[in-house]
Image 1 (tube, helix red, strand yellow):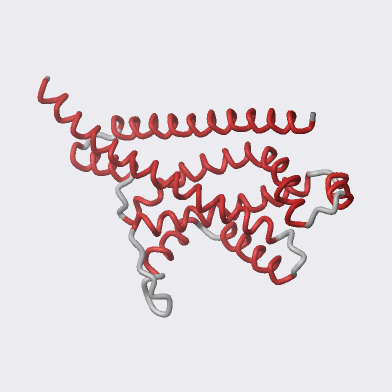
Image 2: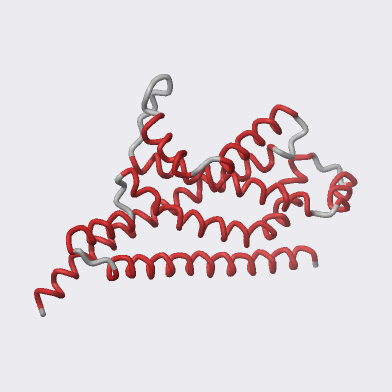
Length: 225
């Protein structure tokens, strides 16, 4: 019995090591996705047609193609001529996941900014605020509260999407569960373990998003008073 628990303890440690990789992927991927969401989302609202075109092309391309293909492109194609951009498995995974989820987030940014009433813009004009000052100090703080719930959902989707990185031999939770399955022949225990871990991570993201949303909403109410 002791030998049994010792063996499975080693396998659980292996999965937990994969969990750290999954957490790292999720955090770094979310940072890139957030940056791309604001760049492309605000780009679609630009007065310049070429910025709107570039933002639309990025959004439609990454929303309209498979994350599997994007991941393979980042890892297998970018190192080849004419790109010559070799990436580690971790870098390729962050790039593919961040750009993919950022394309969905861009539409969230655009919709949230457009949801702010026209009277807010008119008030800013009356106060002689520049376009940058209007967006920075008035529009985006209000729009960000609107974005947060969907951003939380996107972060959870990115977390779940990290499972595909096992296809390029990145040792995340799913990869390690497959290793345990290959070595032990057991399927239920390793995959039940990562199922629980994915659920716990998603629950942390949901709770953090709700808490941040409440705090920002209270801050906006205080400013309006």
